[in-house]
Image (cartoon, rainbow, N blue to C red; front, side):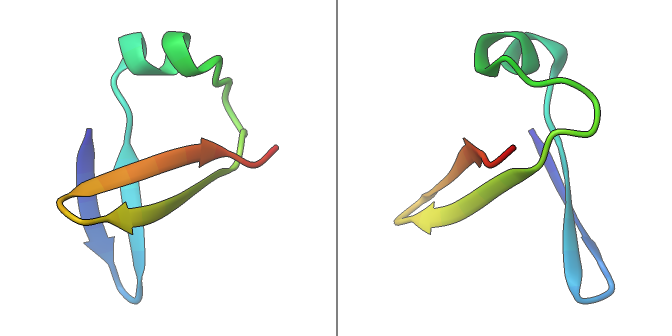
Length: 45
């Protein structure tokens, strides 16, 4: 996963294998939160 700062927002690039495991498709919305040292992703829609 690559995280980039884009102005006041973050751009997150998720590797193809992670997208398959999470069942993500183009246009899906992800939510995320910090859990100590980790970034946790959740599929919102």
